[in-house]
Image (cartoon, rainbow, N blue to C red; front, side, top):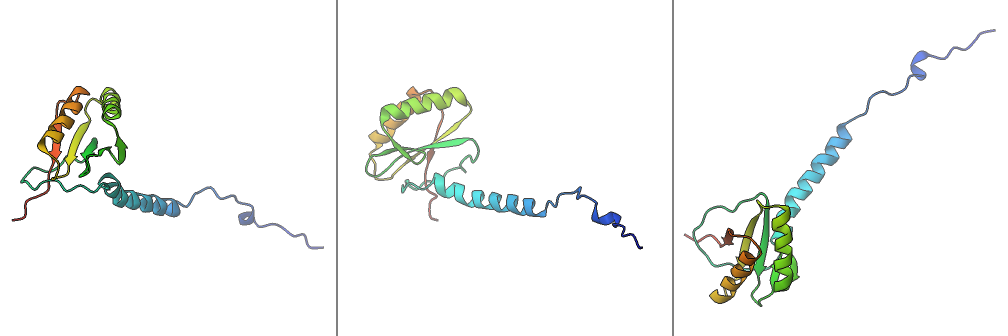
Length: 137
């Protein structure tokens, strides 16, 4: 009468997690977000005037745009002047070091851009970066 013995390795539980699939997923998501974020920020069709300027700040920024038709955009959302002021006040109170980019279509009147800058200033932002296109040399 032979007695069957179970082998010790068959009863051993797995005590390690294979991290390779988790790292693959993390890097895939990182690449997807790195590609899609610039497209989401600059999805509004605007042609700013050409000018030689410094590089734009890339961290901690929000954008306000005025399109060719005169629509004011906060990020990718169309807003009225009153809504813009309210959103900017909330933004300034939550993050005082936020950088604000003002993008205006080149065909808009100078007066429209100045009026928009006055609205932004009334919301508490003293420094606004004007976005332009690089000059063709």
